[in-house]
Image (cartoon, rainbow, N blue to C red; front, side, top):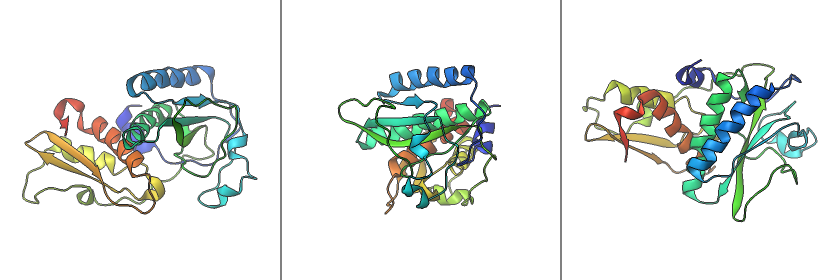
Length: 229
């Protein structure tokens, strides 16, 4: 499975089976985490065989979605800055798509989990921005309602947009987002300079959402075709 195929096949999954994740798949994820942390300065960690964070008695679960069977999850930690929030989205989605290529399911979770003391370590100044369950889902999830690609593009309607740009935005439209808000947009300048920015949201999480969307855009558009503004 290619990353572009993974973008189309990945859906949020909240209920997982008891099937254990094979050691070689966990090792592949751990290797990718090391690379992501080195590149970003984040403090991403993989927690395995830990069921308490998503225990059914955690009353926060009633607020959005219902989780079951979660025993493995990624802890997405970093500084409490917009820069690190965007990195959390960008590098977290790289791990999500890797998991999808390995036949695993995931879900971005911002609130409905419990922080478990001793399950992971934080550095001074770190904040856990979100967690991502990883495992074999009871289903493959369902696609969220797609918004028109045009809603994500801020450009002169008479401007001819290259195919790579349109494909990038189309992939960004498939990106997971907090309660599917997708408060971001893309611009094109001078033929190959791409800008990406957030829009106002009462919910928050816009910087993380932007990082996820930029990850999708890069994969579909091809990094060789453009430069970020």
